[in-house]
Length: 401
Image (tube, rainbow, N blue to C red):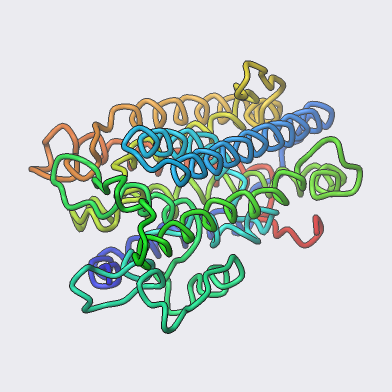
């Protein structure tokens, strides 16, 4: 079992402080409300929904490409087909990370996120070590004789927060294997997926990989549909029908929760304080630095009102920072600058992330992580200030359901 609980104990007070600070600043009695430009705010919210639709469509498209790459790997297990599946996994992560700004307000993604992106995972829950001391789902045919999609969904989170059986990080583990190297990712051989007569373990591993890739697509499909502009009665339509201040409150809550408690806290401060690679987001593939950058870019996308979709098309329009600027130009300018600083800081984190955690606090890697944490905390504070000054509460999504 991965040592998540023990290693995180020392930083829980900080995480609680970050979450409390964000919620308190959003819900305390606000100063006199400043008037937003109603038309500009409405257009910015449409851009926000358009970016959601485009980025989730990209996430779904690349998940389908990953499922096809898995099928090719299973049809012809070899180092080239395994390498291609790993590339497809990384390609699928890029657009998904930029959608995480749409979490944390009970929107469509929050209904399935635990099945998609929960981390860290106890890899032994999926497949135990070869010594047989602990059996996982794959290597326990007596307990789980038939592997099916419904079983993997039912097992997800059943035995605790790291007993994860579906999603990107389970696929990551299956494709890379355990990360036992100090200077690189896991190195699972393609031979692990070769079908041999009498090799029950390989057959079950193949089956599990196929099911996990299919489930990734299955769980993304309703989220993409919920934001699609091609449907008249979905979450997007209800979101845009809300009073502008309520919809903007949801968007700000997503931005602030991702910036502060999630990214600055859970994903960066925890591994920074513990120096434990078990707490990094994508440890098997050593792509955590890409995850951090993707999240910061997602926040910048909705601030600026832009998204470069795969295939060359672009979403461009007024962003949420433009809407905020109609009421407080100085605050909006500050927020743009802070978000740009967090993106730049995230870009400076060297790979692999677990090596960046090592060394003295003034080592380049740790300094870059610390700089990113500080930049994210600064923008979180400004997002909370914006909500308070505009009289926008940290809204729930009840009205949008």
